[in-house]
Length: 350
Image 1 (cartoon, rainbow, N blue to C red):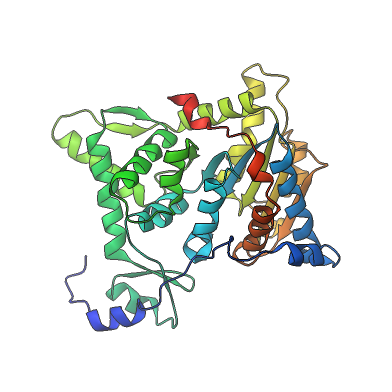
Image 2: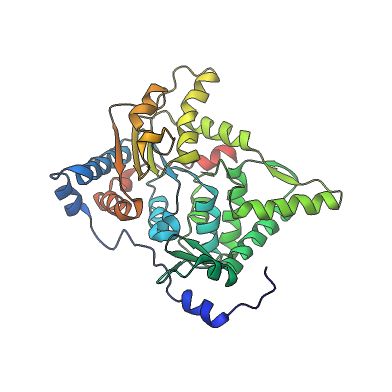
């Protein structure tokens, strides 16, 4: 931390308006989605994507993977994701470390994200220890509490390798015992045996806490715990093999998108030649398809790799925070989740 004193009054002014997460149960988006289905452009794409997600939930054989990249959790969609998990509308989660640690676990500890009602220069924000995500603020001092809590959890575990799923389960257990927010995805996942995978786990606030854990243990001559990224891939592929039919609800792209799609190829390499490609797939993204990046690669392109069914997929090129609440609210109110069998894939690794 900088030695210069922080202007607490100015900091309080900038961190005065909390981001309020949208409640998808408080409004019924079905009439809007139905109307959008009669339109064109992104509106019709969203309506079709919503129908596909409802088809996933209505298919008794389908395991639904929620795949998240980007900052929608910080921007107001955090409770929407939690509600999907709470109501058995997703069976496993693959996400960035930032989504799970810096955003959800962070708020689970009682901290908040704030609306940036004004954006002074970022050097000023740095002097006040305020981190910025576009027009959203985070108190860096609170984020460091997240780092140290991760370190505390790591220090309490027996040394050895852990998949990100196994460690995130320990985070959920911690929140169940000490957390300050009921609607935490990490906490609810622990309580409902829904596994969460972060294939780039240390690329987040968790990385700082885990590095400190290893360095302190090395200095003391003690063994330490570590994140086993290969175990992540193996465990997630194991779920795909046992699940059979599967569907993807993808927000953003990046590593989580590629990671969940690659389970099909990995299963084949392990000798499961009869593994199904992901039957259903929806992706909401603003990434541009022209640069060849994974975040923007179309689901049709993924079919060429043997990962996704070409028939039941939909790309939605839109900022997810503006359309995900409509999709999620529609699916919640159509109610297919009420008769879904609970997968509880987390018990696979008990």
